[in-house]
Length: 370
Ligand SMILES: NC(=O)c1ccc[n+]([C@@H]2O[C@H](COP(=O)([O-])OP(=O)(O)OC[C@H]3O[C@@H](n4cnc5c(N)ncnc54)[C@H](O)[C@@H]3O)[C@@H](O)[C@H]2O)c1
Ligand SMILES: O=C(O)C(=O)C[C@]1(C(=O)O)C=C[C@@H](O)C=C1
Image (cartoon, rainbow, N blue to C red; front, side, top):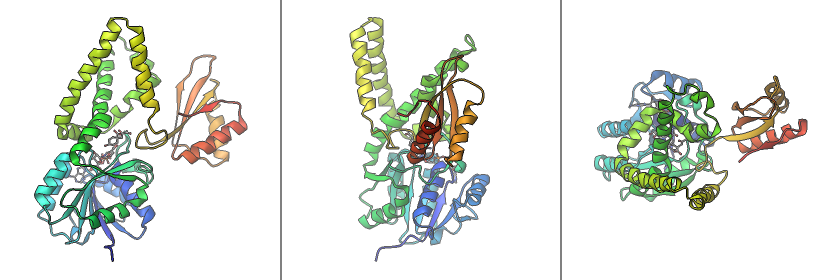
């Protein structure tokens, strides 16, 4: 009979650790989750929100009876924890996994520490948010996202199956990759874009002295492309340190790309500029629409509304009548006497569809989502 996971020891009770715990509980309410966070208040919030069953008395307190250990800390911390874990007394059948955004350094280090002795399987759920902390954790954060696993020669099929089974409440789609391929691909579609987002914010910041109005003018486009610059600096510092080599190559690639488009602008080459944007649009439009791994994991509905006082309470009133919960609300653009755009965010696409029907039922406002 296959090994049962009865007890999980979870280290790092933030956005990702918390979301995994909630997803596991959703599928397996009887699995006991004992959690530890270096920040005691995070641990207490996790317990209060019943994300975990118990707070561990210290980092490794009670770990000898855990069937599964999940490391959900920033990646540099994950390395130190792996190092300390090697001297802990652990169950012979224990499986250890992590959720870090980089895989090469962690997998290599874990293999050198554990060898064939302990089953370590690197993991990375490919969805998240710019928000940190357990308070932002959600059971459905990884729904439809890819969950990358990086098994090695030391990994048994049985452990891989057990891990995937206990994580099935994430409703993510598991994919296997080598750690090197993982770091190359995530470098391109996650780590480097993060650098670009932060650099655009720095660029705008440099213009603030000469144009103090710049922050107020920063509208949809700038906000969309720089949203991720609001993420945890500690997490991203560690990711860049871990993925240095792949990122250095991407800097060269990006500089080539910038020079290419710079030349088109300098040469006023309209046809080539059109093709440049058309090709980018085709690729972007071809991303899978509703799958969370590809698009930020929230469900936005846009409503064209007239700019008059009370319009927000009018809309939220209709939604409240039909008991539809909103997670966020923002006016994207309001100018005198023309329509503004209200962006309503929902936890699920079902809520978004209900909201759309509700607003169409009570008003003539146009609604749309991408
Ligand atoms: N945020 C995302 O979008 C995302 C997505 C996928 C994977 N990840 C990865 O998940 C991991 C966690 O990220 P997060 O977004 O949950 O961050 P977070 O800041 O929300 O949570 C991390 C938690 O780890 C705790 N911590 C730090 N050092 C610790 C230690 N030595 N012992 C115990 N706890 C410690 C922090 O106090 C914090 O509560 C990172 O490795 C990150 O690369 C993040
Ligand atoms: O949606 C976001 O805010 C994210 O940045 C999530 C994101 C990503 O780059 O896609 C960030 C880092 C993780 O390792 C995985 C997912």
